[in-house]
Amino acid sequence: MGEEGSLLIIVITLVFSFVIGITLNHFWPLFFNNYGTTLHVIPKGTFGWPLLGETLSFLKPHPSNSIGTFLQQHCSRYGKVFKSHLFFSPTVVSCDQDLNYFILQNEDKLFQCSYPKPIHGILGKVSLLVAVGDTHKRLRNVSLSLISTIKSKPEFINDVETLALQILQSWKDKHQVRYWEEARKFSFNVIVKQVLGLTPDNPQSALILQDFLAFMRGLISLPLYIPGTPYARAARSRISSTIKAIIEERRRKHVVDGDGKKNDFLEILLCVDTLSEEEKVSFVLDSLLGGYETTSLLMAMVVFFIGQSQTAFDRLKEEHDNIRSTKEKELLNWEDYQKMDFTQKVINEALRYGNVVKFVHRKALKDVKFKDYVIPAGWKVLPVFSAVHLDPSVHPNALHFNPWRWESDEQISKKLTPFGGGSRCCPGFELAKVEVAFFLHHLVQKYRWEVEEGEQPIAYPYVEFKN
Image (tube, rainbow, N blue to C red):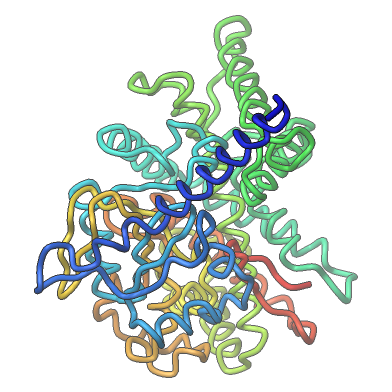
């Protein structure tokens, strides 16, 4: 046999060995279904195709106020807790309220945050969103301290309201607006002002927005390091360089020019000695991410659902008319925010029904037994929040928008987990609610609106509106 024939045999053997290896690695965990005990078993389910598993079916787009075909079929066939193979890992998927709560309350004890590696690549290893253990605790404590300081400053709520009024004033002569774009503009203006002290008309704001949009496109695109793809263009170094330049400029002005200190998040952050330079840059990036995308999506959800419920709109307007009647042209304050009781119910219901965040990624640190199941050490775990939010056994008439369901706060921490829970609950969720509430205060008093027919929020799993 000639050299070419021998080479062909070697190539075929290598390819065959690779395929067999991938297949065995994919299905190997299935051989341990009983896991050595008759009392606890790995949940029922299927692993799908080698390598990809059931990932593509799981990620198939569907309305965000539904659980989608994949979860419907699997829950019907296997129950609310089932096994699958997602994101290249054997996985237990939980649509069960009690198990989801158990997972969130046992962070770093039985479970640990475990997002796919490409997410780490773009967020950075010291991002609060992916850090684990003592690093996460240290970063979170700093974050909570910073946010508490921001909340205590009257400038924060004054800026929120002023920027809301500017956006609403720009609609004065318009008959149609693309609301989510407007919500994004508002939330970006707020977060850049609070974090970096930049106003909307500052040239640096436009530069940061351009870099940040590239970052966002990469975060939600296919995780491929191919030059020219959104993921490559969103390489974290680009926006990090912009943020570092702003930090250095701020320091230079203090030392050389003797400029007075600004009253913003960055100023406080620069005084924190427990953070490295990389961690400070990551903090700014995390703040922009949470304050921009999540807040604007929540604003869009609220307006979308309120636009389809006249009774909810009337009750909301009544509440804000009553608050405004006690003031003249004064800006709102924290006492006014605390009076927005029905507004909070509307926000909670939009979070439940619209599902800003569908699920989170966790990994079992050891063999975990829960009820009749065992979750093997090293397996990924996906608590699906949207499945609990839309579960009729947890929320009666779950597929209807009904803010009045939150008249009772009974077990709200178990029934509603839009911002996660436990030690990884989003530290800035209250700031997001303030922004939405203050925007709604003026929106319902100045405008009426209708949502165009056919519009709806779609989960990809990240949520976008259809049109």
